[in-house]
Image (tube, rainbow over all chains, first blue to last red):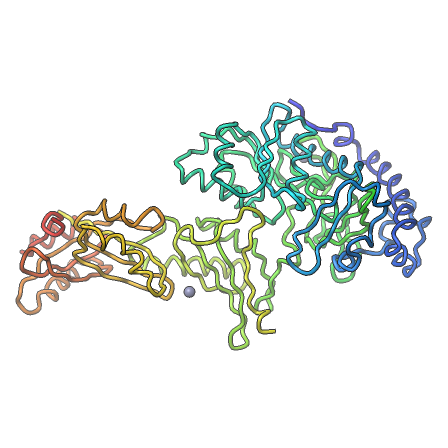
Length: 435
Length: 141
Ligand SMILES: [Zn+2]
Ligand SMILES: [Zn+2]
């Protein structure tokens, strides 16, 4: 079996990676300065010239790009190549404000798909595999990225897109899919649907899953791995940086290797913008080293994360990022306390509940309220009210320990919380209605 | 000896109870007894029905239900019958989770349903003390 998609670069010594990065960044900054007026103006304002950037150590001199910059530049403002050289666009879901549209040359598509191919091979994939891609196809990068990656690996690709779970299961069983690619919440739903139809985890041929596009916890990983009888791998990426595959997990499952020959990662203090040393927690910032059409320099992801470089048992040398501890956008401030949905998910799964929940935040009498609807499983149902109330109390107190504030727990019947086929919506913050 | 009770978990929403019970009430299955325990969010409906399996099937897969053994005791007409039963349990240190009473269609007389941890021990105790226990057949038949 193949262990790497591109062994030379994936296992290159650090000095070699560094040399490649230094070479690429010099060229890239020149390319952006010459072709993107918006970024040239930012550099000029900061008094930085392309010739000041002699290697990746100088990246910290460059200005940051934020999501707001991307919105302001919509649609062509950050395009660095003539449109005739572009072959594709992908776009964010644009649930808040303007969409982000990212452009790709053929070189950019190849680079992106190679990154995804690395992820698939790291999950044990080869040309012998049947890869079922049930990320959404279309503008969303999930479907296109893994689809292209599976092709590069030479796997039989099932371009399912998301939804129609009945058909997903039929194809999974009839065509004996071995690798599943989708959001973790959809993977959990597929596992539940298989169980409902009387299938055991050993009845499917799946061996691995590559799950991303939304935050998920270690507890969720365990639950999916048991539910499908597979090993579950995390994958990371943003439309702004190309799509999934910027970083991916290996068999060690202790963080995602960043494809450093294409993406340079920094951790900064989100308040001051100061670059933090390796191992410290802060906001993840990416610089695309060799993308042509939409090459973002120092893009602030808003993901809170830690980077570590060390020896990995898989043999890869690229730096690892931990599972993002929550995107600053996902963070809720409730009664002055920072709360991440992932913390709530951790408690629920640890306490034996399903990953089906809905968080409601509101403000009543000038006080923030936190309510969590939690689905009950058949085993947990008791005909004795006192047992049920004790159950709510235990869960609420476990939440208080984790979050620092006490939520109100509402137990609801099984399968009453909306299942997600893509990115799950788990928080409804009604405070905005009153502001 | 023990009697089987069907318990159903429902959201505490207007009209939800009749919605859930619609199938059963329109069928030939007879609901002999019904009691509800509720909180702000949900209700737990406890029923003694004439055909347990059929009733469960009529609820459908999507309704959370379970079957529990309970003790049903006949109550005579005399005053303080319920008190005597409760007193007997208390003296024996048996924890009573909840209780409800109903009258049988077939036989003259009332029953009281007792939900306890140890059904067998409770039944033994009550028969020893001269109480008459009801069987599933008597109640649901
Ligand atoms: Zn590794
Ligand atoms: Zn409620």
